[in-house]
Amino acid sequence: MCQQFRMNKLLQTINERKISFAEVGRLVGYGRDTISRHCNGQRQISAEAALRYNKALGIPLHEMRPDIFEINETEDEKE
Image 1 (cartoon, rainbow, N blue to C red):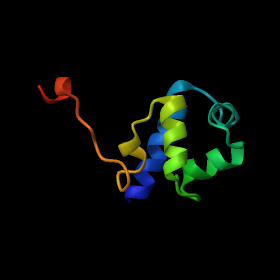
Image 2: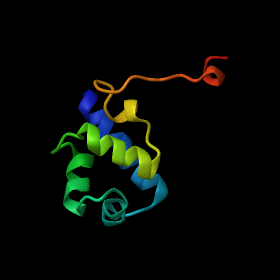
Image 3: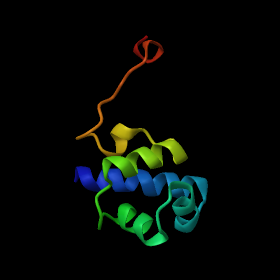
Image 4: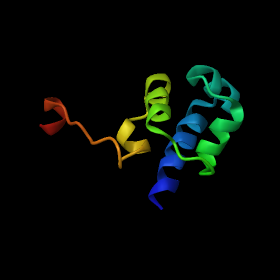
């Protein structure tokens, strides 16, 4: 279930921005098929892939891989 949530967050972001898997692939340096597999759960998002998606699309790391990345709250978020 958790794995599916992470895949949906990636797919949700792609759909919200109305960009293709091919365009995401160009942004993060993966092929279109890899992006598709990450979105549909056929391939787990690695820590490196999560970092690439975070940098290119702004998806929080903990939303893609909470088992690896913890939520880091800033002082503003705590208030």
